[in-house]
Image: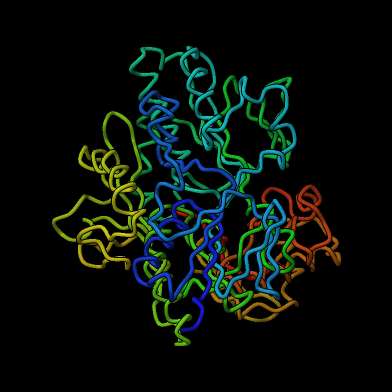
Length: 415
Length: 108
């Protein structure tokens, strides 16, 4: 009997874990050895970070051990990745040990790069300038919000791409609800500052949701490219010189790929993401390197739902590749997102590479309402965490939900 | 949908003034596009680097690059601050107009 093929997975987050578990179920250990690498053992349920600043989730409720999410028969290496030698098919870890592979799966995600924006990590950082995109920031922001009773709250995305493009908007919506509940909303202005030309850029969503911001008295500044944070005068300064003053700034920093990518020859693009075939999830760098989730440079959002829907296709294609067969499974760019709008309501959007978010219902005519606020969508978002740990990560499909974006249930709209 | 006459050729532009069909673009159209959209002249080698990179990214990836990607790319010799001097007030959009590619994509 020949030696097992070797699959090495970099990153034990959403993508790495679900892929490891699915492939472990599909291939016995004597056919496929699976090794997975991560630098820490803290698997954060990232959608929960949005709720921590508002006291709607506690930090320890949204973190679990990475190792504990993996099925038996998967070797977990607690070590950072130093570099990948794509010609020698070998990964070098932080402690100098090496892992040779037949197939490499890159699932190391997108990392925050606050140091890439002048002044962001200056004196005001963690004092009046925060991010909720990591646990430390979200926790510190909780205290800052509790003490905030008047002034200008500014929410800013420095530039795309970011994980979960709707989360900054959700933050603004929840802030409106939070300050209203505390009776201080009238003493606070909330401004959403974006590099895009609108809070919503797709026409149908824009028409359906444009009034939400006005109704909640949230100002929008568009086409703003943050060049630096002025820590003394407390202002965002655009590259074109315009300024947005703040008393409390909530920033989504620039994102990039994991640091080892830049040390690995031509593995990644200018931002450290991996060029990937949109449909097959095979990298365009080497045929035996596949990519899953936020680390991939594909033209859809960086989101958990994307990772899950890509996952089904990826696992089929890795199996085909290991068998020497052509890759047949195809990802259609499907993504969906619950958008918290405050006051116990949320809306749901569902889209793919070809189709923008449309109204209707999901996954079919009898499902959740699309592009419309409802309490049931809010409940859906809250219940999702349970499915994440008990269904998605172990590698199960959501009952009734396939990987491809469904057409039925959607309404065509003339814009 | 509008038709514009650029360098003697009828070209289709959408309601926001972006090219509908990037294949209709030629380099001869650039001086006229630059003047129309307010790019301070003259058009230098660095402008051309940016325009060619915009088109390369569009044809390879399906959308034009962000300002940050432009600044970081090895194909473009200027950083983000200089990009704002070459193409003021939103280099990604302005360069997309002059490079004959659609507006860079957002999410929703």
